[in-house]
Amino acid sequence: NAGVTQTPKFRVLKTGQSMTLLCAQDMNHEYMYWYRQDPGMGLRLIHYSVGEGTTAKGEVPDGYNVSRLKKQNFLLGLESAAPSQTSVYFCASSYLSIGELFFGEGSRLTVL
Amino acid sequence: AQTVTQSQPEMSVQEAETVTLSCTYDTSESDYYLFWYKQPPSRQMILVIRQEAYKQQNATENRFSVNFQKAAKSFSLKISDSQLGDAAMYFCAYRGTSGAGSYQLTFGKGTKLSVIP
Image 1 (spheres, rainbow over the protein chains, first blue to last red):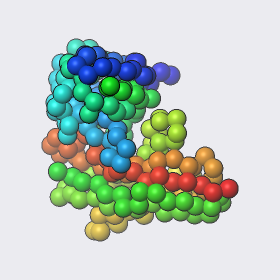
Image 2 (spheres, rainbow over the protein chains, first blue to last red):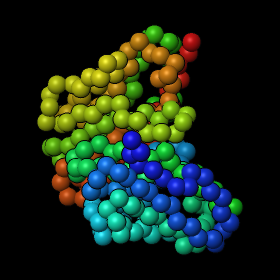
Image 3 (cartoon, one colour):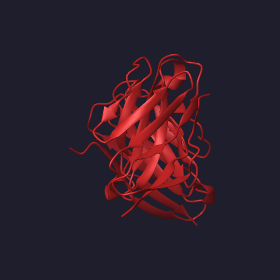
């Protein structure tokens, strides 16, 4: 049972570099999310998707882009990384709009 | 926008004792869902318990139970017979049932629970 899988798990970037985080879920969930977790801040929503081909902004979308070309995948992109984007990123999915979220293991990103 | 407040950044409990973690939330909706998630040092987010606002009965999962006070907008988590494996960060979360709020979970900032042997 893979559930929600994030790659990579760890990454170090230099300021200005770009990268993409990949999230894949095998539960046929409609809804997918990207959160970031920072010390003392809890989890904050970056972007989310309510179905294939759709995306929407969350609480802290600036500096990030997302795509949902396939139902099972949700990509988070950083076009020009900044030290403020150093964080742990979580992908999550849910089947219903009223259900709990299932989370990946998180990806730790450090921007130097 | 809905907000979730966890007023206890850190708590500790003796092994085998009971501890209660507090959570309050702000909403204008009458129907919604509340959750407690556990995050151990492994970083994995694990669902502990969920509560539907339309249900008056408090949810229970083994040693974990909640005290849901809808009028007071309070949703506390009680852990009975605390075990060393309960040591973790605990997050309270809210999910609405209408509009954009139904698509996302709003989290509190978390309470770090330590269990003393």
